[in-house]
Image 1: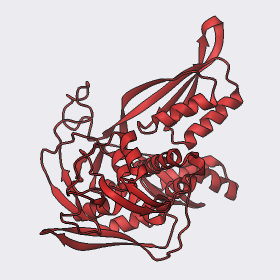
Image 2 (image 1 turned 45 degrees about the horizontal axis):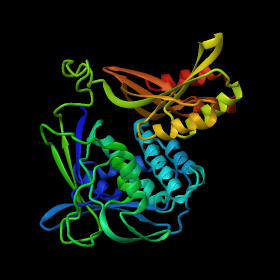
Image 3 (image 1 turned 90 degrees about the horizontal axis):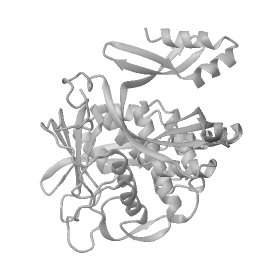
Image 4 (image 1 turned 90 degrees about the vertical axis):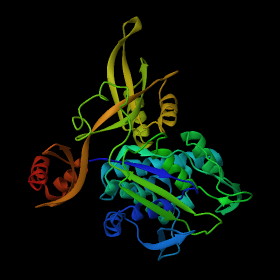
Length: 410
């Protein structure tokens, strides 16, 4: 059963604090490390140790670098690392969304493009492990992605030292993420200069994932994740895990009154934005290039449909599905790469079948497969790129690779 998670950031939020809270709430350290081991980067180690501040016990998690000279990475490289890892699709998708948000914010602050942004702190391996680790930890908890809640974060005050020098707190990136995502701000726990309480990575994770107003009916587990500083208050994130919630993301819709289990047992709800525009003067080359750019920028789907438009002109309906946080940037790309003068945007609920992913062995090599889970049924979808690569190498028909990958799950 999917579980609700409420993240109480009374003292701020960072990637390692969120990781510590997940481990303290019951996520297995070995399972978390196994999932992270598929990341194609080395030179790190995830440690977790008991911690106590002001009489409260919890866990302090740290991503320790065993190779100190780590390269700076751009968005495309970070997305590539996440994309080739053996992660559940919903974890990989959300991890990429977090880094896209960070890249867009950095590009805006420094007056450059997303493609030219070179991450510093957030592109280093510890940030990649933090982001993917938090999302994979929520997956291991069995969290319902639409029932992850946070009612705000304190931002802190004072100064922080970053790759670009000494910056005011909250750091410009943190402040911009809060503005863009609508993440609520709460009072800081101390008086005077408190230092950095919420980091850009922590803000991007919560701004991408969390919804306000999520409430638990029953609390099953509580976890405290401590930061490295020890101020005059508990420097921790508190994470609450519950089996059911008051209300849901489908409240007010026709599905909200469905019998228990008839929807949520097999399907998860999601919110997406559909961007549309009609074109009557687009060339095939222009449309193909626009689709490539939109998918590279994080569009969930891009589709073209034929239209008969005014003055009896044949045209094209462009439809782009986007995560809410990505919608403004993707709408701008539609306007930049087509002749459209405007776009239509609608927010809608989506139902998604439960999914999992794994690697199976065929006579020609390994193939990644996605599993669609509907009750007792498992529908296997081999990854085309893996199958095509093996078919080319072995000189066999593509259908033989597909058949072997499907059979490997039976």
